[in-house]
Image (tube, rainbow, N blue to C red; front, side, top):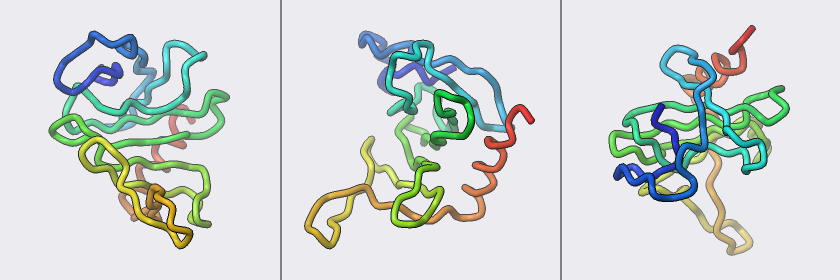
Length: 133
C-alpha cells in the first residue's frame, strides 16, 4: 500500500513506518486504518504511491474521519474533514509543500483555512461513507 507514514523520498527509517494497512477500496480510494489503535487516528502526511486518495474512519467506525488526495510527489494536496469548522459541516483544507495552507484570522492567529466541499469532494465523501453498505 503506499501509506506507511514514511517520507515520499522512500525513507522507511522512522518509527512511523508501516503504521497503516489497507482494509478496502472504493473505486480509486483506498480505505486505511492504523495497525495500532493506540496511535493518533490520522491520515499519513505523505504517500509513497503518487496520485493516491486515502480515507480513514473514526476509531469507532461510525463515520469517516478524513480523506486526503496526494499528488505526483506524494505530498498531500487537500484533506477532507467531517468535523464542523466555520459552520461548513464537512469541509476541506488545501495543502502545499507538505503543510496545510494557513491564513490569518480576524484575531490575528494563524489557522488552517477551511473550504466548503465542491461536488467532486462531496461525491468522494459519499462513496466512502457508503463503504461496506
